[in-house]
Length: 128
Image (tube, rainbow, N blue to C red; front, side, top):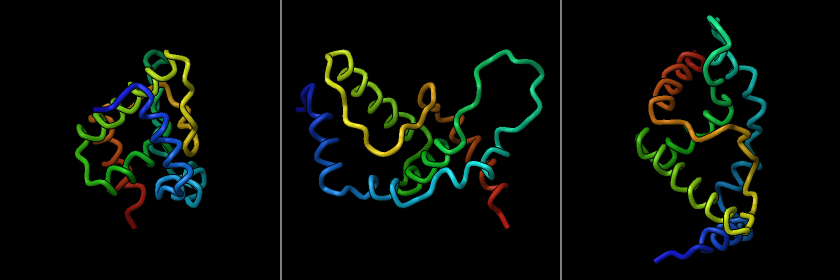
């Protein structure tokens, strides 16, 4: 059974053991994809109402991880929500989780429908 501080310990262990995802984040120049991925967000807006779109680099990372772990859109959303809840719990208790990789800089996790839509758009940008 997992306890309140298990996530903190797991993240520290992952970072110190040279986890593949941490190495991937350091190796892949994610920001170099931004310009090409930005095309996915650029669409004429009728007004400034509504929430802004998700960061395209963050969505690209989600799709890469989803593909690596063979997750459905709903399972990807659930995994992100679960991790976010654990991190929020740590913060509420005063424990600061270690930073693994680069921060996404987004308002929240994307829902499964957004992941599905983005995957369809991403295929059009990167098909040759």
